[in-house]
Image (cartoon, rainbow, N blue to C red):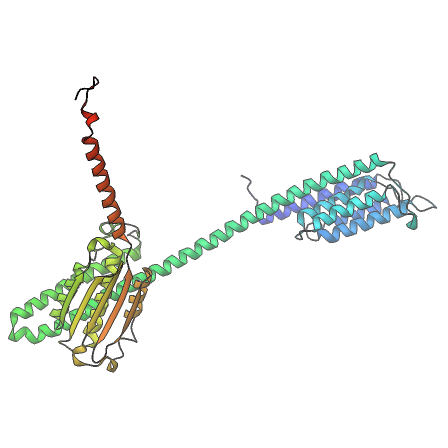
Length: 436
């Protein structure tokens, strides 16, 4: 694994490398005796110092200096520059810089063509400009082209490796951003779940306890036994609410794992049996409640049972808040085509639902129920009935466990029949001589 240095160290190493490249060009230029060789070579070396930042401009400048070099070489009066010269390696270095550092896809091919074509002109020269041929045959051309092709493919492989490393780094950065985004979404969902749990626990428990406490206050002098029963119900409700609050606090403190079982997190599992418990408490608070449960428990998972109970519990809380004392509530849970239908309807105790807007505004009960049912792909409708009262209707799809159960039963029956056939096979009761 290659450890990348820090940005400051990387910049220092880049400067040192650029200085080494410039030094490799200017030293050969100083060894030539022609008057302009050190000048042309020095300018090429200076241009290469900016090859990382402006690769295309640097290559254009180096090619222009190379053209000036050959023009000075072919002047009729005297030879002012050498051509070709060792410091012409700057052309190949500039080409490598374009291939490796350019962000444009077609520039590497343009850079290779810009070196190969002038080299081909070395066989015929440029008579119009007075430039004579500097290559002596096809063999010299193949040598220059082979050297150029080798440098080009080396630089292109380095470019591919750099782009691959950058793409991997970009993917890793994107994966990190996505992971952080998913963590934030999970945290938001967890906060929403905790908010729903808090609302269900606190709102329902406090509503029941408040109404029962009022009833106990009235019955304390006239009917002490009833008052004692009501106070016991208040205590039980408070203890259960306190246990739920402790469980939520443990989740907030991080002491409970979200994937752990209810026994491991201290969470009290709520089932459809708790629907009757909630109905009993609502009766103790002064409501008349009838419950109908026409559901096969084996067809419901624990989360589905919890959702069904919370919907019934929140509906009863709304009845306790907004309906008159003595209101009649009908709770119905039944299966229909692999779906659980939940209906909670009340008569409002003779009060019209339109006269109380608290069920539709100012609270989180209905939105919490819709969020819960939406997790399972279900739907919820809530609104006033014809006449006095209110009703909540929810439909929650259930997993097709009936078909799975029937299939398992069919396979078990088939296996039992196969075992029976093998036991009745006469061949299983014969000895090697053929006698039974």
